[in-house]
Image (cartoon, rainbow, N blue to C red; front, side):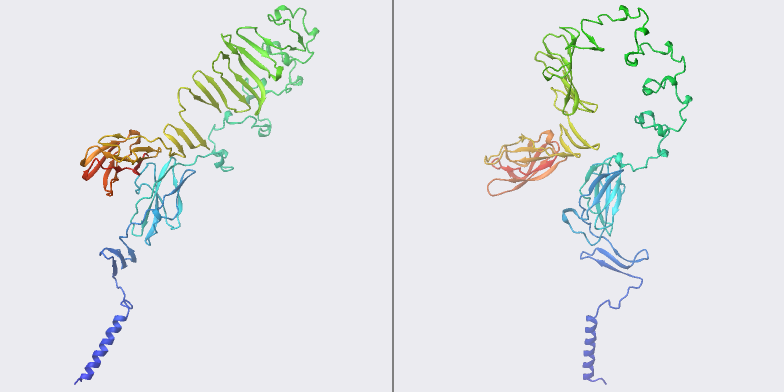
Length: 533
């Protein structure tokens, strides 16, 4: 028979054993046999499955994770054949990378403001340190980044970058030796593609040029070096009268003293062989005409050849039009300027009319001349007209065939991005509203920098209302692309209430209030703004 003392000892022993069980790890010797352990959050939603999975595999599967933060703005640049898109490993607004982050997707499309889909996915960045992905492209594209976690949940897209297009292929981008004969299409190398002197005698095999290779008329005087055809190269009797073109033998083809009296037939040089007035009272010495001025006349329409020299005047060719009131002739002047030898062309000056001129110095020097329609500027074969009646239509600056700056009526753009240019403030077109009741406040005005429009100042309703009322209208040129709904603060007394303000893409500005808006109230529109692009 169990005594009371024995019963007490057994109860004490059981209590000790229970305490030991409670203090021991609950899973110290636990196992999951063909089963899984599920993990749920405080709302009861499934977040992970540890152990046996539905497909028979064993793993730690994290599910239903919250969306990760969007990545930072991609860094894009032009490369050959496409665009490079990089991620610097950070997230928008300095957010911290979540523990279940998996990768960053790179999306690109030619459409501005596109939505990332599987069709726009170019590649992924799997490292948290960031990386760069090349986007193949033959035209400008826009790029955004999207984060995904281990659950496959996507973030919001990053801010968009672009448009950026591929770099052009220029000569420095071709590797030495990359263009070989097998890379050239048939008939690709024509005479126009061969530089003068490029094919020398060392490039032509001995006896390569034979009579059948020379077409009739191919060898002319310009193709024969001076002195190349001499007496031993001409067959006896080969040069006859029939072989000489009329006037082919000129003075520069006749050696000094070659034609003597003995070479002239008696009576061959007579009056009929000399042009009318060929020999005047001027002196002919050693084959030259000397004197101060040679001219076709002394007045009216004429040409005057002036050797210059008087007072440092350079030689010139003066062309008189004979027009009434002509004070200065058209002139061709030879001289030496800062760029070397040059020729100055000047138009005739008639009374007080405009002086037009063109200047040429060296190779590819800019030229300019003035006509009735304006000033013409010519550089490298391109003619640009600056009309006095029409403002300059545009200015473009390119470097390496890439546009870096453009000035048009729309404003100034640098590398394709519009540069803000402050414009003069303008007043809105009031409807049911008017200037502020409190004259200490700035009257309402619109200020644009070409990229954004800012409202500055205050206004008041002309008629008290509850509900909605059209306040004023924004000019068409300053309207937003889409509607905007903003808060409007009352600047009256000590009660800064807020009512609704809708800026529509049509330019109509509507004010909404659930309580009465009085005519004595002043409402501050300052810092309300929207984008124009």
